Length: 248
Length: 253
Image (cartoon, rainbow over all chains, first blue to last red; front, side):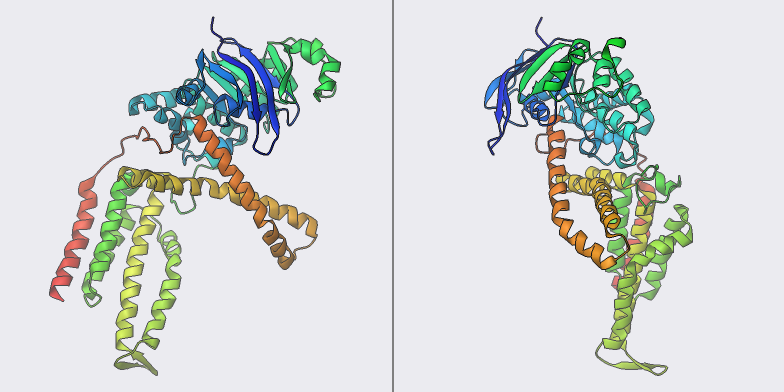
């Protein structure tokens, strides 16, 4: 079966000489939920931007559902792979929630009825159906995060990528988000520093450090490997023992 | 930060004017202002009828008079300017009590005062009965350049975000200044204005990334717009009164 996402030998150097990615290899199967872990500056955000061609890697390829990313295929790549960015204030830029959710589908050139149908379905999926006419800056942190997810879900992506989805959420909001994500049929790639969140949601984790994949395996096993964790500047919250928790 | 109302100018309500489609209101506003401006200053009776049309709109919108007049205070700079005109105008003078006032100046002041008040009043009716997002949608429907409405939309969307950032910086400054020294705070704020610019610029970059990620290709897409109540007849009635008055006044002057 074709993997949902396949990255091979991806290398990216910024104009100032910073080597953000130094040959990343990653394959995610359909329906899989994978956490992407790593310290600050590991290249996680660069990888996300490279996946949808916002920054241009010098080497390597990105394939989404078998389609190779390139200048001609970018619109379809961006349709297939949806990214929910970290700060909802960046993600939600239209005057109302409903117009924001409609932005993606409208860009796909769908007719008005289909745009409406998808916006409604996406807002319902995140439990925000009643918020359509509200202004994004009047939403609470948790609500904004849900709407930000709806803006991407409305494009009906095959792979959903989330950048730090649990940051700035209170514990209840964080658990509700995990429940919501666990219920989605989409392939998930979750970039996070929140290791318990990763363990609860994703059976598999990939550790990125220094622009390369440092480890790839079951989340519970990686988190239990104290040496691996220390080398990659990853640390579990005080008192948290992954061995005592049942994964997803 | 939470609440349902999108902006301070809006007066929440369900009046016929609140329900009227925004693009119809925009055309009605532009048409009314055009008629008011076209009316010669000497046709005082015509302004009376214009005022009656405006009063009807305020009544239909169910706006409290206190709210309406408070919003109207935005024209005070024009009022000050208008009141100065009789004193500085040239030409024949007339004695009003102890004051010698220019006749042309008085007409000029009346002209500015009447037209500004009626136009601002009509704008207040629009902004009080229409959410900002709907006003923008109205402009979109009138086929105004999409890039302009998009810029206006972004401005409104990020005004609060940037204001919030400035507020946090001010709090941080105040926390370290110890007491409320306005001058010290102003100096510190001026020195961080460059930082605020960079932050806003970077925010713009991230927003652009988020737009690209959702298929933005350089032009704003046409949204699936919901049908609003379009009642041209009622809007046209107000316009017809205003314009027939303006034309009659023009012809008879």
